[in-house]
Image: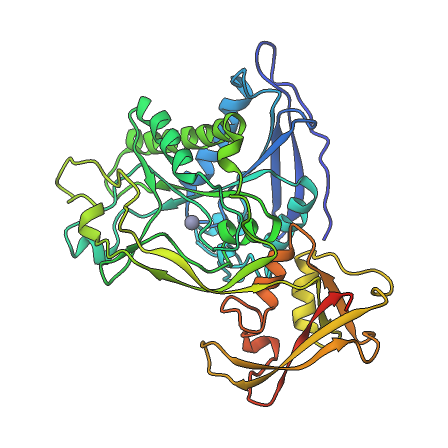
Length: 443
Ligand SMILES: [Zn+2]
């Protein structure tokens, strides 16, 4: 993939404005540019990526990202201007935007492609993220306020902006995300806007914090790169809402982006992951537990004026880890397992170069019993010094920040793993061995 740099550096006039520039980081399937615009010094200690438009049918999200950048460039808050470099990818799915469709030109949902990276747009974003190394990512979307099963209960969603944080237990999540949420809510309230947590209202009527899957940008980027991420969902206008309400919603979402950037700079400690999270143990199985919060508790009736989604529900279902694994020093993947290796390459996992250490302990497993979608019963078939050279393998060390992601995606029993994907060619049949080896340096 070609990555062109457009030397389009321009100052936007005198006064307090700051220098802006842009770069084309890749192309869509149909050749449209993926354009990142920057503001703030290259040497800034913090770097925030604002990514909008993964879903092509969410024009408000793209407008909000652009409006945030314009405001930031023309009137940068004094406390931010030397501290943070802003990168705005306003349109992550230009082919979808051209069609007004959620998906890209080949029908892929880009916000479900952050694990396998099958689309050229998502691949370009990841390759670029590895060089830009953001310290936070804001993933900007629009959400529909009318969901059929909520309308059936006489409810709509009416909060101007919803914020979601990583929910996979091994993903890097801000330790004090409720503080981040509360500050952003207070900032927006000054402008007369509402902000609340991003929740999933299930058809059953139960409410939980989003999803455990790692294929979306919020969980996927946080897991792969160890970057705190925030999903910024602005309410999509309802049919019949006029231009002024549409403008108001774009303003609200742009203000939420600005509030989050300010929070990342001024309250960096809140964005840190809790100590001890992640390596060396990673969660490979989890479930939603507890709670029993019902839709009616958290969504106002459409006709009422009561506050909407005002607090993070205490009774909410939360992710509980049911199995965690101590990740080894490295994983060894057979060279013949090409589809899996292609994914690891696209994800940019660094590979061991040269001979592995002189003494390596190898763990390999055989399936005793395996049912689709369920935890497999595994038996260690070898554990000890490597009996033969590892020439027929490629070796991926579990160094940070990607180490936990390798564990989540390569462990044989991970419910989030690549091994369970039939298209990658692994059958979890009893008696078959799991092809990926766990390696420990030393004996
Ligand atoms: Zn979306």
